[in-house]
Image 1: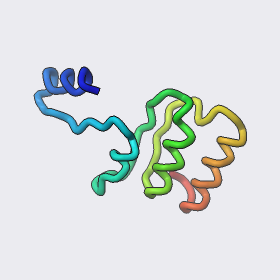
Image 2: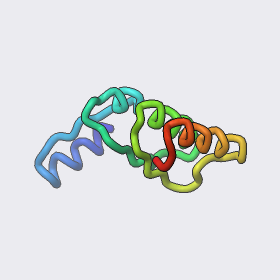
Image 3: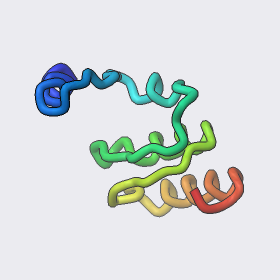
Length: 84
């Protein structure tokens, strides 16, 4: 986190907000969407937590590890009203 923050600061000139827990990021009121680019084992839960906050999601592959996990995400999308 520290190295990434420093890299952004030196290359782009600004200091980004850094989070050591993605759930703190999801608490922000100014989010409309998230990109989920994390180790595969976290994809399912990050998607479910983002959907719970009514955020749009762009997730890298794989969606999840098992068919059951994919069904969980599919059902959460449907509960939230469709195509997120």
